[in-house]
Length: 202
Image 1: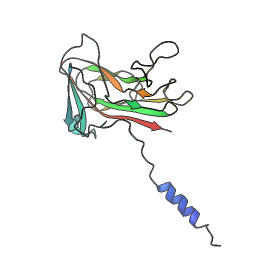
Image 2: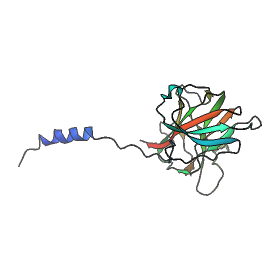
Image 3: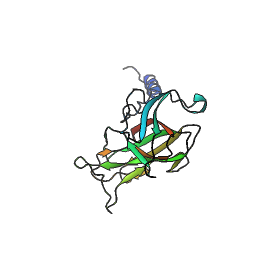
């Protein structure tokens, strides 16, 4: 019988060098690579696809984005919008939510979403009767993003089953989750949005 002593180390080395498969992004066109607006844009906002990086000096590494220009006040209330297509999840698994913003105007943004079951259009509620929601945070842990900003600011959250290391825990019957945000800013302000993703994590 031939010895396998030399073959095993080689196999181990090949496996170690093999690239890990990237997680599937459950949001199609989250980087604005297609000329398709993925948000339900309200009448108070003009939505378009922006070519070129609006970051200072164009150095943000994001060649395309969704440009959302505020046309009118919303009676002092935030203007909300979300991804059109439903995002289906398995509430026994964990997911990472990401989104990137940039704006040279004055204002604030809050990002996050609600969850639904397969039957009702109403968001699911916690055991205490409150609507369940997750909120995304900036790298310095803030749930409210204040702008202007010269560069892109990423917001992120993880959601998983009870007992996981995620920021938020799914509730029973979670099936479909939203990813949206609320903008408070003056008319004429343009907010750029890109790199939306929802990916399963171990």
